[in-house]
Image 1 (tube, one colour):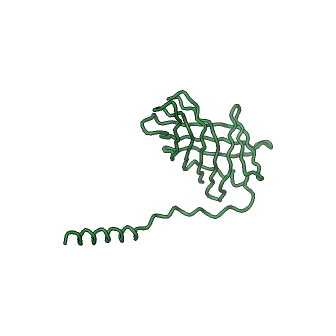
Image 2 (cartoon, helix red, strand yellow):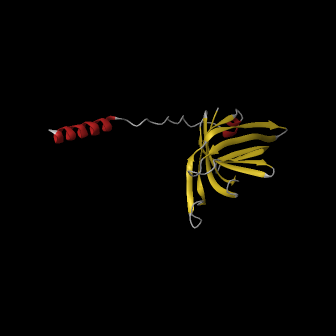
Image 3 (cartoon, one colour):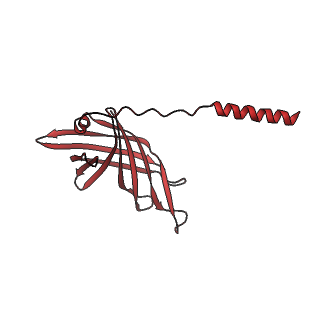
Length: 173
């Protein structure tokens, strides 16, 4: 009787697990139509940031460690304006990231005012805020959502190193 009950309980559990549906992520809004640049001037807020890269392993100096994750405490904005035939931008990207378990969280804060340009053939935005230049590839362009990525160098003062990092950023109105 005990074996039958165990087998029946196991089958019931498997049947229940098969019926549980994974939540589907929110579908992406439709791609935008028309020129890209006017959409930028409506202003965008940083909604989410993901990151990944490689760093020296703090627990074994002979190896490297991969880090990848979603940031928290994200904030920031991108504001685009025109003034006297100049395309101006104010940007701020601010987030915290836990690179590896047991390490001091990283705080990334980049802010600048400068000029910007866009090359539609390679879907790339450049922000020039002397002495910094940021480059973002536009991965998805919708009226209410922008998905961009950039390869950035992040200073990590806790280890006195800089980290080449891919940063994926989600912007919303």
